[in-house]
Length: 125
Image (cartoon, rainbow, N blue to C red; front, side):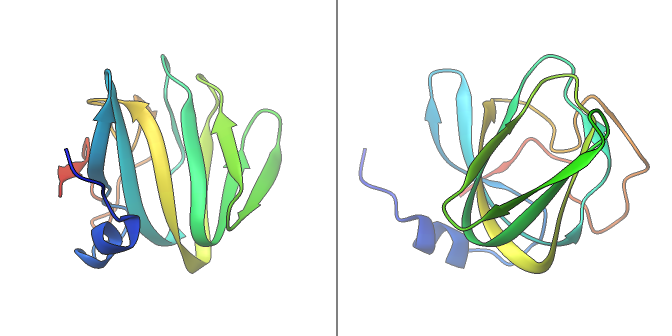
């Protein structure tokens, strides 16, 4: 029950698209991740997905409506449940996500997962 430095948490790993759980709030994980390049198209059928950009810039391509949301440092966006989306960060970013514990990073339905994508529910710090 000590304060958690997000900078220290992010400095503790190098893997991309491989979130670390920094804390839990009720039945939700607070996860941080380093991202660069493209993730996969995916959808969370039963839960929204919250993104906060801590550093860099994150792009969220959405299928319906067909558009891309660009988030800069300090900006947040929630992808509604049932919305196919594809996160990307051409120049890299550090992000915080808030989602129910056990939620897969590639959602319930997704494109083929390439080897560099860690399809996990988050790793403990």
